[in-house]
Picture 1 (cartoon, rainbow, N blue to C red):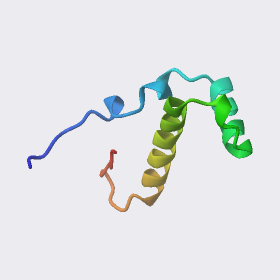
Picture 2 (picture 1 turned 135 degrees about the vertical axis):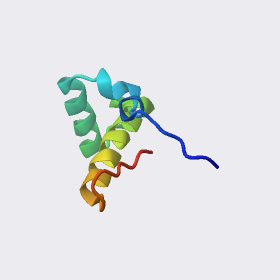
Picture 3 (picture 1 turned 45 degrees about the vertical axis):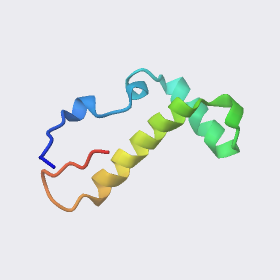
Picture 4 (picture 1 turned 120 degrees about the horizontal axis):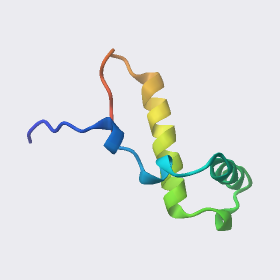
Length: 69
């Protein structure tokens, strides 16, 4: 297996760039209330992408190392 370089700007869920603040609030509310009919699977994937990046960034142990999913 060879080393693969990835542009971090291209390694994000596409919905992260188009969801509005109102969308993020609706998704958050749906997750809090377990309202599965008010969100799509793609929106939940976008939230998972954001949360993953936040956790990895917080737990990163080496400067200059970025972990992408």
